[in-house]
Figure 1 (cartoon, rainbow, N blue to C red):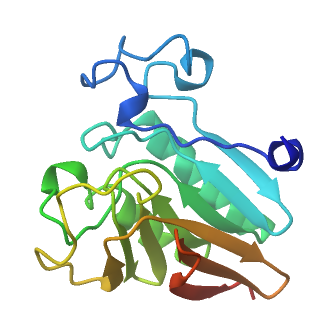
Figure 2 (figure 1 turned 90 degrees about the horizontal axis):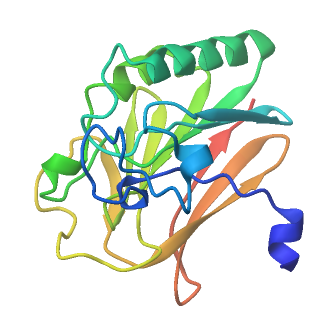
Length: 206
């Protein structure tokens, strides 16, 4: 209660928030949990400005649910364009990751978001996603992509099984990402369950 009383909760919905995992999730959302927020899996994205940052939550649960001409992509580009005009930097959050070195190629999608985010590399600092239960950091065209799916349990799909040419760091470990923001930079630390820092990097705000 003390934490939730002072911190906003901005959920990035994923495939396990749908009852039967069916595509394109038109009727399978769990109405008892996320019905108002989740809708049909195609809408209900949100954006919140906090100081010099725009926090963008994209409803993108799984591979194949965000075609390049989707309404969410039009909405996302409008958010990034507005952020550029306002001099804001953006952090993007969603469920389906863009890159992985695991063998789970059916759970990643690098053909939709990276081309758009590369055009807005002056705006987008980092892209955070889950889905794959590992930690992996990649950098493409100045945008940092973080797969952070190690909060619950580790699966039998380890990192570094296949080549990820954009990888900076990867590990199989239970973790969470701790993000600190000041006027000059954002510091991100991946922290293991033993409280040790697994990975850390800075994102300049100026």
